[in-house]
Image (cartoon, rainbow, N blue to C red; front, side):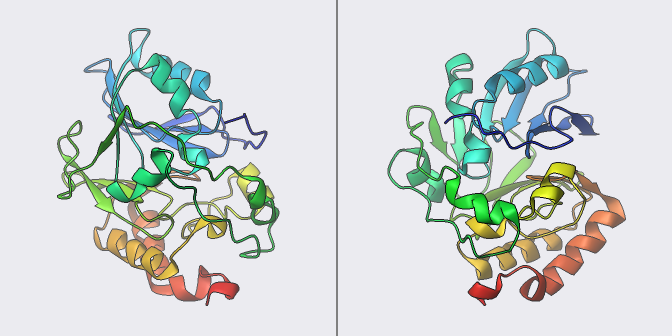
Length: 269
């Protein structure tokens, strides 16, 4: 995938959400490093950022975990271009397993492309531009591992994968019961992703998944309800700044309640 010029004011910055959970922004999307650099130089990467951003991600890993940083595995919330953009480049440097839900396999093995975007989902410029975004399948079959159906994540004891479909068929979120830490991917986000100014400035506002690429709105709503029911205390989202405590629980509960009125595009109701 060729590098895309879209960016935001937070690109290249990181936030330590917890001692072993680090959110790093790559142009307009977040990735997460799971691992405590005070205890080990090893980490698991969640998602792989924008196209051609592998150098940026590897440098962030070194800054966080030191020159001898070791990636143990990569976990994908889903296979959209802004979450797998640097994946092939990273795998050339880090020969590690990649884990994803079984329903994402066609989009990660060269079998199927994602459906065309809904460019009329919103009047915002990003929604109108979405027809230019890559949606073709990539092929990482040699590294791809399907997550167990029980939600266990082999390389992350204590965390579990929760199937949160709607944005894509095999979208997952990651949750740790011990401290109620959540990585939501695009199941819900903290910026109005359809509008260019909001994306560039990263204005905080909780929303459901990006409208232009979401394929099943009832499933997306059910997924938000599922995540709200977990009562997470911190959340790293796919787009926008992390959320925590009352700000997270209050806004997520409101999103789950009002989703049908506020999130589903008019041409999908």
